Amino acid sequence: MPTKITVNNNGSLRIEGEDFEIVDPQGNAYGLQGRTLVSICRCGLSSNKPFCDGSHKGHFEHNAVAFDLPPKKA
Image (cartoon, rainbow, N blue to C red; front, side, top):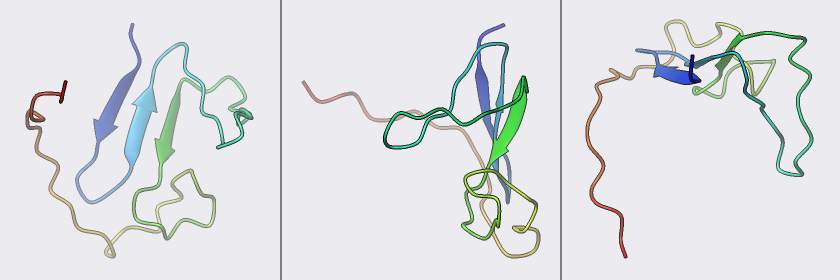
């Protein structure tokens, strides 16, 4: 199964798959302890950033609806 990222309504980015890595700006990997599903904070309120801890509930509104990006510039 390929890695899938789901943009949740009013919440996190859910990443799920068998083989993905999350790294910091220096390229150091976060220790995911074998997890195949994590949620990344989008609201900025989590005390466990970059991971979601549910702090967004009632404080972050975004209705996630897929759309096509414009064509890449040459």
